[in-house]
Amino acid sequence: MKNKSVMIQGTASSVGKSILTAAFCRIFKEDGHRVAPFKSQNMALNSFITEEGLEMGRAQVVQAEASGQKPSVLMNPILLKPTTDKKCQVILNGKVHDNLSAMDYHKFKPELKELIKKSYDILSEQNDIIVLEGAGSPAEINLRENDLVNMGMAEISDSPVVLVGDIDRGGVFASIYGTIMLLNEEERRRIKGVIINKFRGDVEILKPGIKMIEDLIKLPVLGIVPYMDVQIEDEDSLAERFRYREGGRGEINVEVLYLPHVSNFTDFNVFETQEDVNLRYVMRGESIGEPDILIIPGSKNTIEDLIYLRNSGIEEQILRLHREGKTIVGICGGYQILGKTIKDPHGTESVIDEINGLGLLNAETIFEKIKTTTQVEGEVLSVDNGILQGISSDKVIGYEIHMGQTKLLDETSPLIKITKRLKEDVEIFDGGVNKEGNVFGTYLHGVFDNISFTRKMLNRVRELKGLGKIESSIDSFDEFKEKEYKKLAKIVRESVDMEKIYQIVNGG
Image (cartoon, one colour):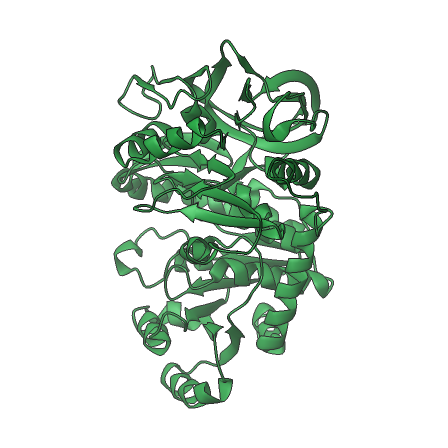
């Protein structure tokens, strides 16, 4: 029997494919189906480590959560992580394969078709419905040869396609018509309908255009999805996240530096759930404000991002904040940047053998050839000063993705005692904190998702500012996300003709 599937493709990047894929995953789950997402190839610096210690794109992790499933690299067999303007780290089935140029990777694509097909076949045997996601646009005619992620993947999986257009950016009818007209006849036959996404206003005004585009493309418009206020990680709207997350009326200011090679920015989404926090991303060309907490996030190219901080004048702003006693936090690559030196003897990340860090932590990092990828559990160690004072023994879980190993030197103490790695009992120390307690770093992505830890840290900031403690409005970040998935599914279900979607899924 043919596997049931539907593929969400878009007229361009950032039209909302990822979040609509998550929405359909949740709708099918609510309707009693075992469903899984699939994206053959994801290019993103936002990644996650599975229970097996394998790396995959976070967009598919979100979709897996929406499906009620544990994330698996079967859902994202190829992950591309840009390292420079011309090269990517190629991760196959969760493990680093090589660093390749765009041209070399394009030549490598034919060899990957069997890998993708094997992952998809296993996943389809385990589930009732697969919701596939494309990348960019299927009308990238220069990339059609050896395509593995749009119509090429639809052919591999023999999936019907729903095309998504973004009306918010303008020109949605032209983009829908142009996309379809640039496809060959066989590819056009795969498209079974169109969804118009991110609509604001009165749908009645749109109806004449809907009728005209349906007459032109001979396909139905399956739904008009409104602009949605849901707090769900969305790989397709990174620019919007950074544009609209500034502001707020809270008493605590948290600022995150937007590095040129920023990775795993989702580490900070949890701050958006705390009513007393103003979260701001400091973009290129902007200056740091007056944060209570300044965070240097993860980076796919730590040395280049350190040079950026130095050349842009941001380094001096960070050092000024430190002299004023403000709290500086580093996550993964940001933790490495806080140290005295970063060494890259194998050329793992850069042609620079050694570079001085910010020197705010007395620690040194050496890059290795092997990447650490693991899920961990641990507890926060005792800190005598600063915003972590009194949070010892708080349990935290997270995951590590890094090439470097960091050694603590005099007057720097470990931050977290790791008690489990990949579910095995261990006793390893992670992170570092200075003796004043106002500079600390950790390799643990997701450390702030631990609500108890984060709320205690924020309440310590409040105490230092002469404010009373408050409770978190959510008990756990997982519960919060679950409510948002339900909200997402409800909006999309009410906006799309689900009867027609099921007809498409069932081959009708």
